[in-house]
Image (cartoon, rainbow, N blue to C red; front, side, top):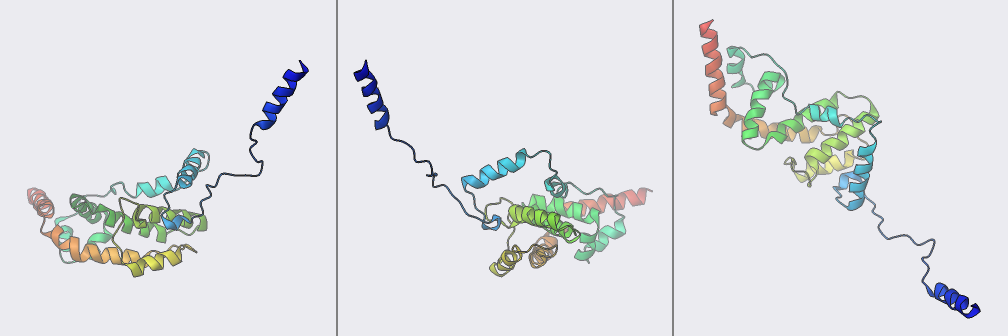
Length: 210
């Protein structure tokens, strides 16, 4: 009996013991501006999503992507868009029809990015600014995003510097570059599109009938 207990103790002592202070080498240091796609980022995002008690600003950012409510514009206003891109972009009706056109060209993200930047400019709360700035980066700046907008390296460097201390106007250079791209590239095609011509014709017909 004593020999059996002794052999059991020897077998137990022969088993390898896990060191108490040793940790798995899975540490990942990153900043959210680095577009890191490692597993620990996924875990953190899942943990953050479980905090249902804390309100987030994601839903508010997503609301930008909803078509803006507006009344049907008069024919004079629709005609004026052809001479003034800025005027069209200032009206919800103009942005809506232009957005529909951009969707057909698979470039809707340009307008969504511009709208998100406009929304950020109106924010004063520092925590909200940081959250919205992060969402804009993840949605439109990150190379991992399917909605990434086209920006040159200089503008991206400016954004990366601004990420150290986010502010409501941190995307101004990028916003201007995308605005100019829409004005010079997409807008002329929009004016020549069947979508714009049909809108103009239908509005003109409705006006003449009344």
